[in-house]
Image 1 (cartoon, rainbow, N blue to C red):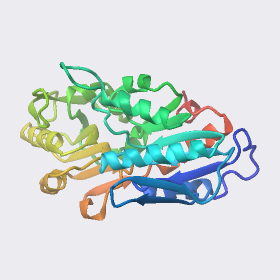
Image 2 (cartoon, rainbow, N blue to C red; image 1 turned 180 degrees about the horizontal axis):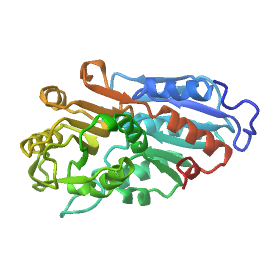
Image 3 (spheres, rainbow, N blue to C red; image 1 turned 120 degrees about the horizontal axis):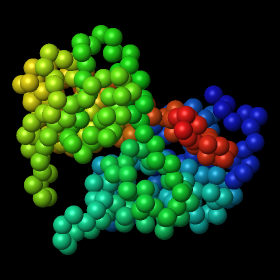
Image 4 (tube, one colour; image 1 turned 135 degrees about the vertical axis):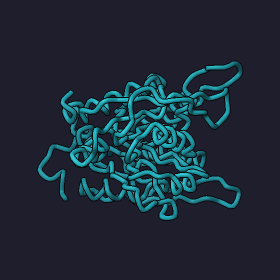
Length: 326
């Protein structure tokens, strides 16, 4: 649809959309929504694994948005983003915005033990140094990551998209309760539950130092004879959410649904989720999910309309908060 027809679109030149290789379907959906074609570029990987970018046409003076998620292969996708940003900066674009639906290294957000990095800060610095004037992302693992950027940005959430999905199911659920996959997600989980007018319970788990696996030790709240929605921001190996499923089932839960934003799905997530007794698994396309990792009970909701509207508002200099009554 021609979303931009008849609008004043010359604050920073015209919108130009560029897509990396990590989320081509999402990028095309954003393009279709805005009625703005994806601009041509060549992304080349040489035999020595060095990456190269070449634009098909000049973007000088234009309002440019680079759409690239930084999930697996993380370092390749991150470097591809940085190289595209620098290519466009050297082409003298009017304004350059990084649209990063999933920001990598977001779990490395603090120095919580001796002799460790804060890699999320490093990633923010690299995006800025590569030439980005602004950034957009969704559901950061920790809010303080916003402070790592010295450039303005829009940190969005996909939870209202997930909430809208479950609002349609609510009448068919028995005494539903929202359960957070861990206590660190308690605040966001409470907001999720409030929007659905449901009570909340919490999974308590413990992680030992740098161990990738955390141990679930109990559930705080009542799930007995209730339908349950387990919520989290991302699912990586699916260890925590499958343990959470087991413990709420032991506590007498009925049907259990799983809801999360970022489908990282590292091995052995597919195997674990395929064996797990989830009524439904609901996520978004911030990360491209290959066909071989799609499950029969999985629903993938698109964030393209959200990102497209924010791109449009940023381009026109209008409030993004108004979209959410803020």
